[in-house]
Image (cartoon, rainbow, N blue to C red; front, side):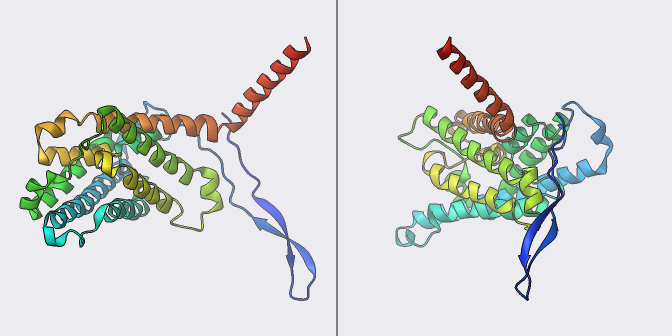
Length: 304
């Protein structure tokens, strides 16, 4: 597909100090969709940039799990005491912990690895042709390993409350079916991946390039609002590495029994978001042409 580029300059009217109107040329940053990568390309295995990216994804996942799981355990520990029930951070604080940490880490690592920090996000970008299969697989491995190490740090520091209070592992809450939990994880990850695609869109990046937090903030806010919606249902996964790290260290049969939900749901939601972004948002002209063709067909049929 040919690359589409917006004109690099526009003319704007400006009123000068002596109240005269004059035309000035405003230079805009051109943008275009980069060509899709070759899925089976292995050439980057010999580049240092790939391994820097893997270290960045590992470190970011470690930090995310350390901060967020420590917040979860601390909240549950405070809430378990009868005289401390109103002093914990609550669901709102847990959601802020995940969302704010993701914003910080996306901002910090986007220049190194793209700031995925989530196997579902990596899968969505692979489906959209933005990363190769080799990079996607290695990213997922680095993210999962970093998550396990991050939760291990939490367990080492908070061993007794960690073991007694569920280890921050995701589980289906009482009163909800497995289907409801799967749906919550799917829709929650769709929202996150949709925010990622929208925040990193080439047109938006070119227009808002002077705002360094333009991608990190909406992605973090997406994580925040999804946690508010789904913490009461599944504890909110939407990140298979987060779910795996907690499950490995907590290592209980019931946790593993439900663990598939926190892979199938996020990957399904990520695929849906990639399809929606590619077909509807980025290839809108194709959709319009299809609708126009359908309208023309209906008119011809009615006049026959």
